[in-house]
Length: 189
Image 1 (spheres, rainbow, N blue to C red):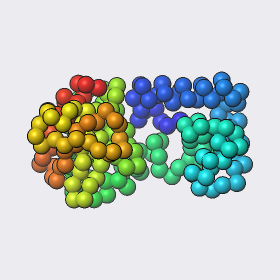
Image 2 (spheres, rainbow, N blue to C red):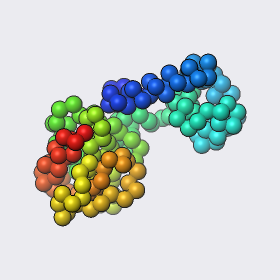
Image 3 (cartoon, rainbow, N blue to C red):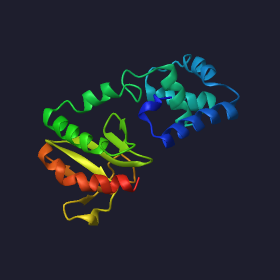
């Protein structure tokens, strides 16, 4: 299970329910499953997932939880700084990210969730996310695209389906103009 400091209350409950269901429905605790997983002959994560399903009938969420405990990734939910540094290595993108982070985390009860491909901001639910783009940053927001002409509809971004709008930011100087949208999205979360 990831470090709960980087999870919303809702995410913590979800992980706890997956773990509880694993134990209740299989009769094995996580430590037992970890021991079984370490016998897996595969070395690639996707192949290990397939093996867990074929050999033990575990679905994706449960198998992922077991495999992450058995073979902790070098960078993952429990090591957000490593993920963040890798994702935001470009100095311009990092400056935009840092400017958005200052505005978003100034709002109460915000949890920053670093993922491999984006940075998510949540209160109870995700209200925005940032992803580096070519010489810019894509900011997804939990507001409708018709809220402003400079917003576009989100299309298969890979973050929460709650984020309906996207705006492209090319410099940190553009961040103050999105502060109101960040607050509006936060209020909906």
